Amino acid sequence: MMNRNDIGYIFVQYINDPNNGKKRPILIIRDSDEMLKFYKITSKYVNKSVNIKKNYFEINDWHYAGLRKKSWIDINHPYSIDKPSEFYNGLKHFDHLSENDIFRFETFIKTH
Image (tube, rainbow, N blue to C red; front, side, top):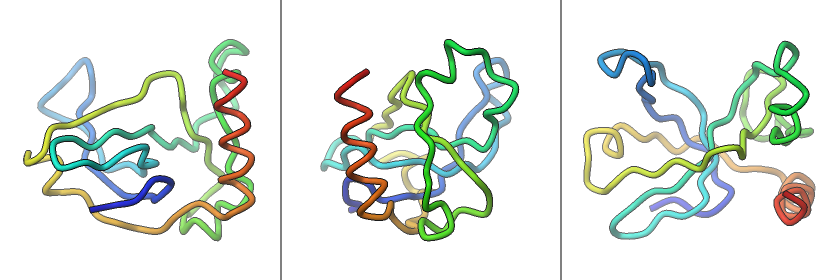
């Protein structure tokens, strides 16, 4: 079981092509016996619209979190998967947010 603010990697299906997808980092919101709830983490920020950028939280300490490049948490849509499932079984624990980013993220969530 993973903890809130842990970072994992999971296979996420493409919306337009559910037979394909990619492994992506995710931020755990809640991991219960029945379900895993999470936000996607992305490195794609620059070309997003102003409205989309409003829902992206910048991870300042992305190296500390074990990410390979500057990244943002997309809070526009929380995702969930049932447990057990093939997607949950493929989840790999990676790392977690720094204390500084956790504090900033909680403040960010409260204002959105």
